[in-house]
Length: 158
Image (tube, rainbow, N blue to C red; front, side):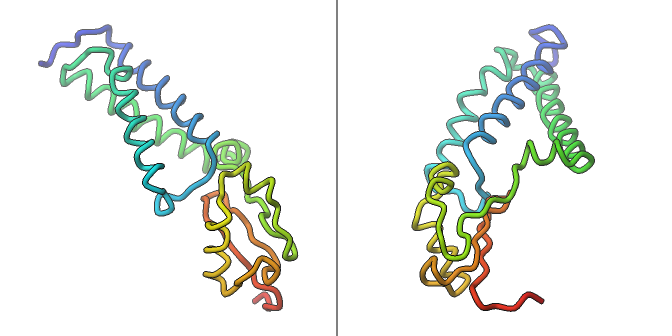
């Protein structure tokens, strides 16, 4: 129960490799906020966690091995968060940059496809800003957080 079944460094290495690989793969799939996750996104996250569980523990079911894995994951998360707040380049590589989906009423459909944003998602964001067509929007920005910010034409900046 308390005795490691693997070498002490193996749970740490496994956790680090899996964490970084999943982080990279999720980053490549596009931007979304947790509140904007579809049932398919949630299912995908659950299946990813199930798929990597054996790779994380490597067959070691001891409490010490589990504790080392969890500690490694939390330490990596804290370290990456700290690096992102200190270095702008690292933050941009991790989070991405805001991108214009609509500029002066014209939709960039190629960018919508690239970021896996449906036309319905864009229209919902427009409606929340009292724009009922893209032509009513001065711009719509896909923020690095995954949220879509819209500015209606004719509004004054304050």
